[in-house]
Amino acid sequence: MTTYAMRLRFSVQKRIAGDAAPIWFKIGDRDVRLLPREKEARLSDAKDLVMIATGFETADAAAKIGQTLSRALRVYDAHHRMGIDIGEDIATAQFGQIAKEAINRGGGVLRDDVHGIDVYEDTGREVFLRVEIHGTVSTPSDVVVARLQGFATHDGELSGDALGALVQLNAAISASSDMAKMALAVSAIEGLGQSENWSSSQKAVLESLRGLAASDPSLTQIEQVELAEAIERGVFKVSLRQGVMRLFDRLDLGHLRKQWDTAYALRSGVIHGTKPLSRREMSTLAEGMLVMAQTVVLRYIGGNRAD
Image (spheres, rainbow, N blue to C red):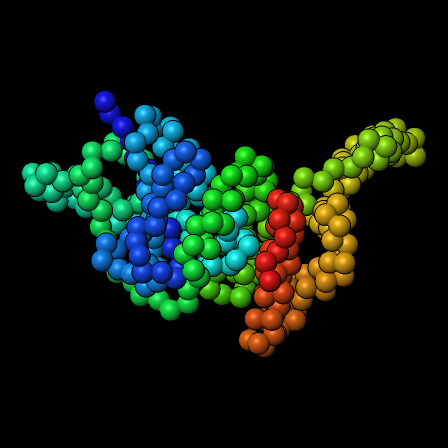
């Protein structure tokens, strides 16, 4: 009977402390092992890691647990800012057909090295390209595993917009430049704010305004159409700022209103060249916006920002 395996490769900026590998843990009733991508590396030295689960009856079942673990890693990163990069399920290292055939003749099955989720037939003979990378900053492995199990348990609670915000926040945490951190942190918050809508009463008033503009006898027919369209384009959608303000209020984060306006104005000044900042000021602004995004996203998904 054919069975399937799942391999999830990801990288971390802050290392996971511990030398014993693999580390076994459970997601539901499924055994998962965490180990360095480089076979001989210590866990505490490894920037690139893999999670592997085997024995699935279908490829879809294997992919599903990969997606659960991927989302759990994103939530963990949002809490603890380890700089986790889960990739896009694309091979970053590939062997040619000649090399694959040579490995096959030796009894192995050479697979391309996918950064992200890779699902394949579980023959037990898979061979992956390995690279050794050393690091310094670390987090205890038992803490990482316990938190991942907890996040995976609540995986079904993540909505599409919450997952989108997590992806933006993860990217902001891993970004190397302050400008990128700011842009991605802002996107994470603004994206959540775009789910805000006018109330039924507000929509009724807007419809009345559009109808009034379209029938005002003091206007020409062309002017009526132009004004009605301008009202619809300009006010029928909640603006970016209005969406963010509503989001803050809904999450009981109204104290962030002034902080957002101040930081956003500085960020706009930097982008448009009207408010140049020193490197230190840029770093402080980027960190502040990253902390704000972390607070908002984690409150949105029901967590609390880790200090």
